[in-house]
Amino acid sequence: MTRFLKYATLAVCLLGVIDLAAWQQPIFRGGSDAVRVFVTVTDRDGRLVTTLAQSDFEVRDEGKPQPITLFDNSPQPIRLIAMLDVSSSMEGNLPLLHGAAEELFARLRQGDVARLGTFGHDIVISPSFTRNPNELLRVLPRAISADAPTPLWRAVDEALDAFGEEKGAEKTEEREVILVLSDGKDSGPTGFGRRVASQAEVIDRARRDDVMIYGVGMRSRGPRPRMPGIGPGGLQAALVADLADPGLALVAQETGGGYLEIRFGQDLGSAFASVADELHSQYLLGFAPPKRDGKVHEVDVRVAQKGLKPRARKSYVAPKS
Image (cartoon, rainbow, N blue to C red; front, side, top):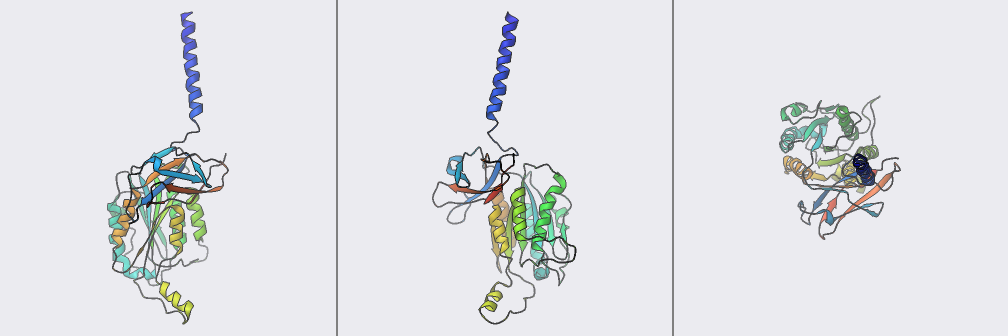
């Protein structure tokens, strides 16, 4: 009888554990099915705010508030790919690129890894993720060709490919970020047989793959383009002729990254360093997707405290049952 009671008690306990586990399944805490949203919060002066609590945030999916099941404000490891424009208009910027890349890689923390890429006549990305700055900087060219194009969107598209080259089909828990520096407009197709990518395709891929994209635009320091025709349209074209592609700011906004514009006399290295500091000062929020329909859902992050501005990705693709 005693032995029977012992086994009966054990069976009841096991059933209780199994039942508890089943009850806990809908709760997501950073698993592959959770929607992860990284949030940057700034005050009115643009300074980072890093002391908020979970109760200060609200996350909405298609306008409906969702329970926050994951909250973390500690620095998260990042896998960063920095893509640098080496088109003809960047000819006068090559020394700046080297110094800014060094500044960026000096800000990497324990657990962070990076790859460095360039785009002009060719798109070249360093072979593997590493924290070794010497290995990363070998990608930078010694000179910039005077007729090199700006395959901006194809470069970002290939950077998205590069995340999958080492991890295969398995999704890692590390954050994936692309930092793009450019001073020109996308040049479109650059040769017969080469893959073509658009701004819209880049946004769709980044949304699907959960990749955050930062953009740094700068005025060209190479030879100025030929003056456009006279008239209102020509004047407007002249004013923006040496500015970065406006789509870069939109891509950053849609994916939750930031966009900076560098003008003459401003420090590019400081801009890169500020991106690294921001990445290490973000909040991680997570929630269970209310619908597993495989569709694009709008997501909106709000903070309760007035005067603070949250920035996060605008949408995500829900998992499919």
